[in-house]
Length: 350
Image 1 (spheres, helix red, strand yellow):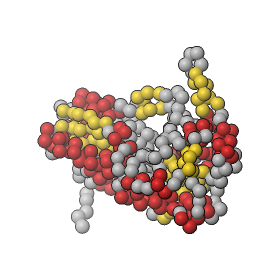
Image 2 (image 1 turned 180 degrees about the horizontal axis):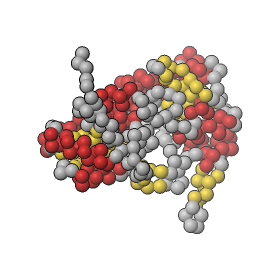
Image 3 (image 1 turned 45 degrees about the vertical axis):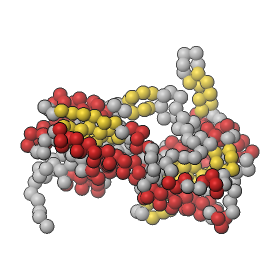
């Protein structure tokens, strides 16, 4: 902000740039117009955790990890940085925690499409991802209706179902499968059969990549042992589609949105949210704050201890109002709870 006359530096490729001392000044010309752009002008890296940094591979392919936090601290000293503003999700805040404990002043800003950062009700990037997923589900609706098919759409979110839940409700999806509510194959088969035979003759199923069957495990597409978060989820959408095809007479198709959700121009709500977060981050920094994460809670902007958030995930509560509302209008969560299509008992008309 202009009134503080702050000299701003950009660190390239996240913590990788901090390890390798890749720091450069940022001017107004560098940042002009970035509000309308997706992504980042500095680059990003989700594989670099300074406290557990892969420096080599053993002969058998096992990664060798080293704590390179001292290199990060040296970069801070070399560039005479008074504070770091880190922008990201739970992985970013977990990586920043050792720096906070080492005495570096770190201010965190929530940015993750998964919306799973503990301590804040929302992170910027999430609403744009939801808008993208909703549009995709709307388009699948046309094909499903025309061809009398079941369309299964897998979306990102890791261990949290925020994208699937929100986009599912916004698009009027018939079934929403999220990690927080393990699904039952018989309940899914029964619901789809009823909808295809005595309902509109098509169905839209949105499923979070971390969803799992009751008593089962998440579907892992691959493991990257060199990454701070080695598990890469993916494939549950096709598994559920195959299950539906076996249990019903329906024709089933699968769509995986994947990284489509991470790209593109941010919607207006995300631009406003990012501006609020950025303003609050600089304001508390110049007010003397240290080791804080800016958050929004009950639609009010504030800040919490960054260390409280590090290493924790914000999952969808089972009593969340959006789940209750979705069940009330007949949406299935694949768990057999009887609130579907008038099965919840007597109703009151108002």
